[in-house]
Image (cartoon, rainbow, N blue to C red):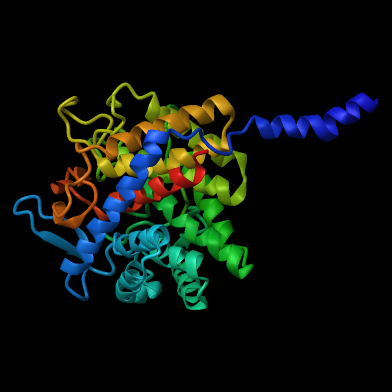
Length: 398
Ligand code: GLY
């Protein structure tokens, strides 16, 4: 009897704790590389802030003439550059990064009232969420809560999802990318005590889990619902190679989104979904040896198809976190895969040379190949998730 009690009260919880990987094993060489790369990123973004005209937000490079393309504040990527500046401020403690983040956030701030986009999570949480986390200035909290209310207006309880786009001939389109916007809603519930936001996030994540994935856990890009009945009308792609193909960044958004949903709710269904997506990505026969995915796992022309560095950056950051929630051998596999991705991204094959690449950090991302838009160029979100992943690596590697 006593023995049983000892086992349940003491030994079992200890064994359970030990079977989870709370931190990954540090690769000393990669830790040094992460530091060198973060220092490079800081120098590169210092150049960016010197070259960037006031009142603009960077987006990418024109693939034809190499000129800088900027982003309007209502474009989904507007928040990544100020968000990356917050990361670099955190890393360097150099107030120039904080000032630059604040200067560019002033351009994005009005989007808190925008109810015509599902991308408020990306646009507002990446800059203002980091600003709040680092400074605890209540002004940032107010902007985020307004943003969460704006995003919530796009939720349809019959469908059980937040509507993604207003454009096109869709009935009620929901894209896998939308999982990323739920982090803002979970945060809003924690900070305001209003459960409504997280309920919307959970409902959206549950509906997406039901309808967005095939049995092998690859996700469709767009699921179009009937807003009157909630029935699935059709499943299509917008940025992938084909309706049934595995668009790489879409897989990365799903992986990151469900890992984040597990972090915020501790609902095991989300953890399992993230694990299945990770396994689909890592076991994919079309994954290149350096673990930087082709722009679509089913892209025509593999092995000569273009890579999408942004997909690698998002995936690496998500895998580092997922490894902390999974059992030892499995966690190690995710951790090691993320390490391999980071090693690749830190190499000259993908990392820009100082003063080149319009001062972006990474080269070779793909925005939307079917639209011939942002093909083989730098992208602000590749930089954002790469810097996040390097910081995570430094924080979690032991
Ligand atoms: N959220 C749009 C994209 O990933 O391109």
